[in-house]
Image 1 (cartoon, rainbow, N blue to C red):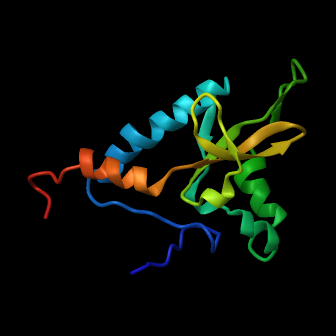
Image 2 (cartoon, rainbow, N blue to C red; image 1 turned 180 degrees about the vertical axis):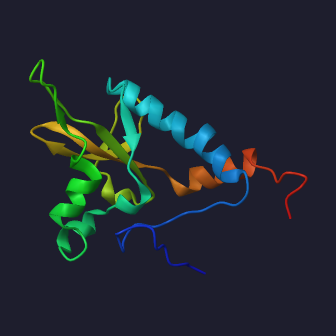
Length: 151
């Protein structure tokens, strides 16, 4: 069965969950290394995940009832800063993991990771990084085992 995902503003973002310690293994050994390699290939050293409640899909852009400017500002733009001493604008780079390949129209040549990006004045501020569900499930089968105390 499919359960309702109430944490995200989007009605179109699929939500995947694992029990017990599996989610930590998936994040630490599967997703984070892919993300780190992707950003290293793009020479981006500071990046952070988008909060789950801010996850959006390309379909959300067509539905202005859920995706308002306030939402985009709060989730993506609020941390933009201008250094008073240098006048330089700091654009924090955020990313969200997507299981929807249709959201990603580009492939990183160095990592083969599928992605897309939202730009502000030709600078990326949000990346959609695709994780293949089959690859993820294969990783879980091979690397995640129930702990002796789990029920």
